[in-house]
Length: 292
Image (cartoon, rainbow, N blue to C red; front, top):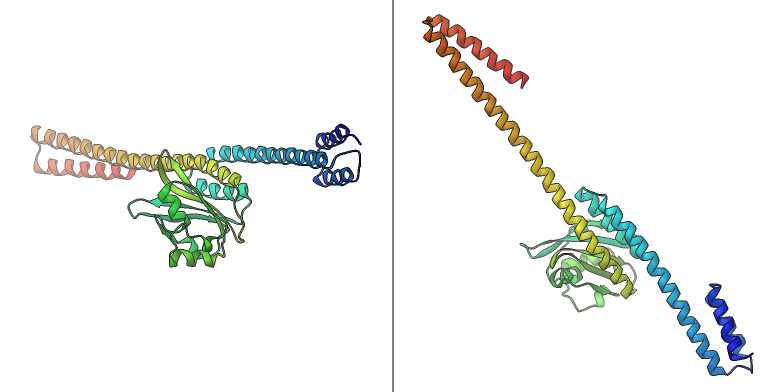
């Protein structure tokens, strides 16, 4: 078989989207064909596999981007802060197909990032863990505003291990952990995590995907916070308005009572007349409060 004809066979397999096993079968056939030089067989096979890998990578990226767009659209439709937090960690777990996901928020005054919401976590110890800036993988992300991934948490000495954090991670039997910052401009407001129970590395693509998602998640989180603040402010304004209306009504009733009593006196009314008018004023005031 001529080299050009052999190359066409590989192109046909690529065009027909055949499995890698069929490429391997063609390689074995080429090795047994004396009309094709062995180096040509190896070169064509390597090129074909490279094209196959690139196409698979492109499909994966297309699928990830589609999932990311759907996720961002879902977040944009949510307004309540707790709903947004739940959606962020749930979607992160789905996007990376990881065992667990969780999110911590920064407390700048305390110099800590504290656990806020989790998916797949079972222990209360982990749900309440707080990481000082620079402590543990999450504390390092919160401090540096950079993503960090480790295939084996307890074997990684890039961050400072502490007994409370290590104990919480050990209780959940977590090994591989990825953390990316939730950034608003240059400000880190928290950390988004993905983790697995076995020691397997997160790929560069995983890091990029979660980082992209975290950028949108931080905006959705900030919008939800602002919405909650606006709702709280409106409630305070309504309460203040009700108090002001009540005060105005009280002042108006007091002015009316003054005018009525003054009128009785100016008309030369007796003390009994004044007492009767005062009784009417007080009854009117009580009726006003009941209807108000």
